[in-house]
Amino acid sequence: MMEMIKLSLPHIGTTEIEWVNKAFVGDWVVPLGPNVDEFERRLENYVGDNKEVVALSAGTAALHLGLVVLGVEAGDEVICQALTFSASANPICYQGAHPVFVDSEPDTYNMSPAALEEAIVARHRVTGRYPKAIIPVHLYGMPAKMNEIVEIAAHYGIPVLEDAAEALGSEYHGKKCGTIGNYGALSFNGNKIITTSGGGALICPDEESARRVLFFATQARENRPYYYHEHIGYNYRLSNVSAGVGCGQMDVLPERVARRRAIHQLYKEGLSNLAGVTVQCNPTEEFDSNFWLSTILIDPATGFTPEDVRVAMLNAKIETRLLWRPMQMQPIFRDAPYYGGDVSQRLFETGLCLPSGSVLTDEQISRVIDELHRILRG
Image (cartoon, rainbow, N blue to C red; front, side, top):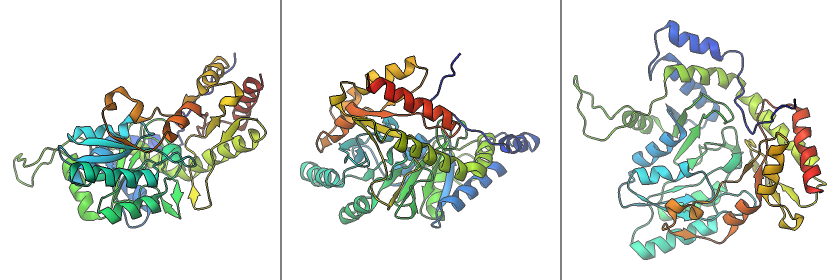
């Protein structure tokens, strides 16, 4: 029977179990301990740029705490990329703030700098205040145009919280994604480049800001001999057991990134002569995506929609995924302000994510390519 090719499965190395055993042997089965400390140290060494990292229970928790330490409060507005998973926007609502969505630009799929500035100016005209923060997303591992975004944000005095959940290992102008804005959120969910089963981290600019994040992540308990609270806190710390998985995964992170890039190259070559299909690639040499998921755009002139192809591929035991449905098209955000054109909607209507997990073999990728040729050539 033909084996199912999955979109992005976890890829476990050989040392994770040793780190997890250390947690049990040392009786550190709690949300702190030596594995957590070591995981944070390894992440800090990897991202560089003298950043501090706080390990957390999820990428969503990282985004939420980023907004907390940036002072986002009820009634504030936060600009968020429209083409993304809802976890990029939900933490805005956790704070009682209001999301303002902006369109994408076509080559990276990410936040349009032009639409960003349009939104900032327009919201100031409407409310008399500038938005409190900006959340660009490095979608599917492709870096956003951070130089332009950061320049616009600095001009209006607005901090930037990077959603780099899908972009660990990606670089823009030689800098790791997540280190370019004021803060950066990472995810270690089961389908990411590396995993801790579930988990995330917040990249912080300095030691003081990291201490502040840790304070809120551990229930905002004041330094007294009894439980005393002046702020609302959260139970967002990563467990020492999960951090052990992360320590082992850090050993193989460069290999995992290299493999995803190699898979993308196979798609680029194998689909280059398939009419009506465009593989998303790095726009210029300043972009270096990890290609967490390789994506294609399907020209409507082929007579096929991405949903048509997704169903046909599934029937061939190959899992694919439609691009994220933009936030302005989500019922829960139907009343939120939106700025830009129809780029994000068109990307959703024509885009498809291909199997990209580092555990996949060249033969499996060839099967995906062959099946796409078979379907789209009728």
